Image 1: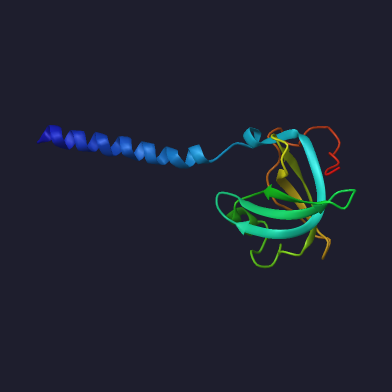
Image 2 (image 1 turned 30 degrees about the vertical axis):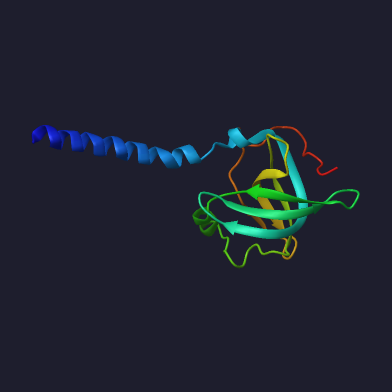
Length: 148
């Protein structure tokens, strides 16, 4: 009987460790997805906002020099952090808002970026939307002109 109990306890411990590792595997580091040497500043119109864990996402239509529109995806802080720094879910950023976003491009070159700061055209307010790049400042290069 003791052997059976010992086996059950070890089995539960192993199962607990495996389950605890699942969220860690799903989460990625900044450097895995984004390039801290490729800062970007874009202005456009918000099309969607998703307050999800572990990060919030927002989508924005951006016009290039030829008038072509591209939809960009931005990742930022978790909703709990946004709430602590002054964001309000159904008030701060809404579809139709015009914003300027500073952040860093995705490594794969797609229309995806990690947001750092959002400036709202409706009131001129600047709010932090995500942490600094992995090296702290996004590098010493000038902002990338995108799209172009």
